[in-house]
Image (cartoon, rainbow over all chains, first blue to last red; front, side, top):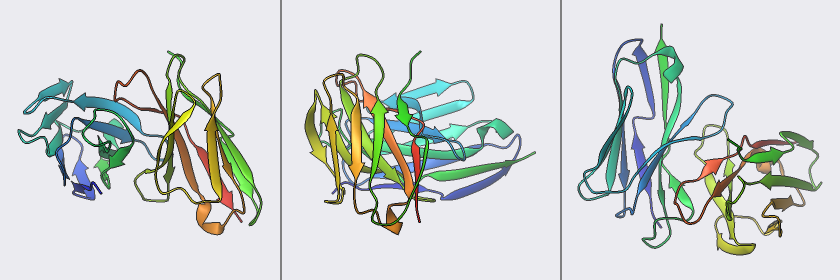
Length: 114
Length: 112
């Protein structure tokens, strides 16, 4: 079945430093989604990327979808303590359709030291 | 905006007992997904429903069953609970094949 790998598993940064997490799928994805989960919380939808090579920005967050639609990255500029949490990428595993059950990456746990 | 509602938020059960988890999707969302998340793990897909019919099945034990009702809420029934069933159970809802899933706050199940 589809596998989604995510690195690094952990990232510790000082407040103000940048942070990047990378996601790689074993199969071509129709879209990729990013979620943030705070400790003790639930996954919160951040963004969905659909087009090959797509780049989207949300304030200090920049999301990229690879040209082959098999990899993606999330970059946070100048991290803040509020960025703490686990960042998951996820792709639909429904035979190439754009919806369906999500296969999640293992997540990257981000800690930010003030 | 209305979000996904799950109840109960916390549940403590003994081994071999049964549990029922409820999920109320975002209004006008027709698809519900159930995920199980163990400590330090990523969410694992269990089962999904579209328009009250089961649409997909993942790694859900035979001891578990689920359904979606006419008002689109869904229930996950878990029987013969085992210690290993202790986890966070999330319900996510999706509207009209949008591909975007919105997660509920989860039910934290502890089996003793």
